Amino acid sequence: MNLDAALLGQSTPLIRWDWIWDHRDDVLDRLLEHLELTVLSVGLGLAVSLVLALIALRLPRTYGVISGLSGILYTIPSLAAFAFLVPVFGFSTTTAVVPLASYTLLILVRSIVEGLRAVPAEVLESADGMGYTRGRRLWTVELPIAMPVIIGGLRVATVTVVGLVTVTALIGLGGLGFFILNGLRRSILFPTEVFLGTVAAIALAAVLDVLLLGVERLLTPWARRQARQVD
Image (tube, rainbow, N blue to C red; front, side, top):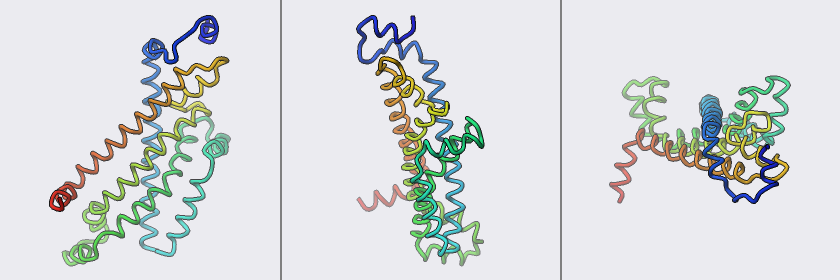
């Protein structure tokens, strides 16, 4: 007897905790898939955003164009983007990662640009006076100082992507979205799967957000010291 038939034949609780326990291995697999898609998408988006942000800072006139194109990409419905890429890449990870990464550009480019622009001019002059090359100054002075703003944008982008990954269930790569879609597809709605996929995705987003906050604190100990001095 399949699950739909069982639901027809008996009254079941709203949340079947025994079903979740019995499918714990599947839950772990879908969770890891969701995490993989999120990390790949945000990582790709961060790499592209850093390049675009540096171009915008070197050539200020390009910033409006970059922001405009990023904004257009952000408004494209995710399902439409996936459908457009399926004929090119098939039902593959690439089909999911490319659109998901594009949704991070608007957030990350702005946070990187604003973070680097906020570096005090006297700090840059001091680095130049010490003989720093442009590249060394960027990696050892500017990016560390801009890190709180950059990671703030990264946190927003990561939480956004975690939510969007659930939509990739429609092309067979949904991670935790698999449970939401499967629960809605049954002839009788099975709220346990919908609950599981939704709550697990929210929990994953919260955990990643806390981890990124921890990374920020590790990379910017000087910011904590300044905060304590202000208090």
